[in-house]
Length: 273
Length: 236
Image (cartoon, rainbow over the protein chains, first blue to last red):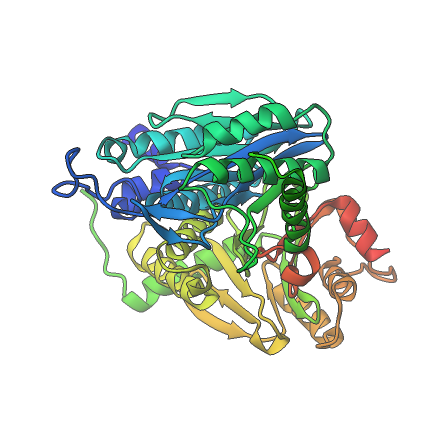
């Protein structure tokens, strides 16, 4: 009797918000909503999709940037969507794929990290955070098989090692550490091509912001689902940097200046890009 | 088979209350003070890792006295309640009042239904944009809930500490003065012809809820735990 009580207490002790929801409020989990009876492979559901995310390391940290477009088939679903979020003090994540599920997963991940911190009184290690995110993406696999996939990119500052690190994922939750830079989403091939030419070791934070903007510009140039800098509405990509002082959102003025200088340089060059 | 004696409900409740009160009175005291800069939570606690003060949500903190395992389970339950609520509705829908009422119901249920009541006393504090919007709730072992103003003192020497703090409390206190006031209150009563000794920094646990965390630190979460160096710097 005594032993079974102790076992029960130990089994119930969890620092994970997701595990808690799974047990007590499974209907609140984004990937537990049944997707049955909806889409089939023949007629994929028409929902907004988030597109290109780029991430790279620079001297002292990591940076992540995302364009502002969401598409639904051939229609632009949103020009204002934000796809890069701070996950906690020392990490950010960017999402590509089905926007609705991705935004809910992001919210869940943010609460998951904060919940752990409050229950345990200490931050989860960067590897721990990356693994938790992988588990959530794996949880979404049934929906991914119905065409509602979410593919995140995760970047953070490893406070114990003192370096910035990047992680990419596949739809089954597979987690891969990336070096130097990485991209996800529909425009990722074009952005990656640009990064291969523009990225170099020991970029400063300002240079890295310019490189990210130029890579997104190239992605928008060739991928219709990626939005370029919008000088009419003054919409710029969302860019976050993470270093040993924590996450920081790059100010709009800096993004505007960097975006306009990319546009100007290309206008002057006057070439087919 | 032993004979079951009749015990009147009054006697039963009184025995339970006395039992819980005795347990709480053995512990050290905790002070929660609302002041100009926010809310300061100060506990006498020699352990640097077994906390009596904790963060519940963006603007909400928790402080407790009594048995560690009991208030720790309540703290974790509070964090779960707040996180589920904030996740399923919105962050601003998590309030100290809602949390305090859940605590009151849990403590009340344990007091009447369980083998033994919880030997704990809790404070739930929520910092507002102005001092008038601060909320301090005190919860006792039987589920009673009280809405307090300016400060809450709980634990072994609560009456003595409370009267000391009452003398020095003003609405215009900053964090350094508020923490100093709490420490003076918590200092053990002086022996004959001896001045009161302050509690050393390593024997206290201090956390604050910053009133303007967004503007000052750019953080939504107002809770900040102070380590020994922070405490020494604050009091210097």
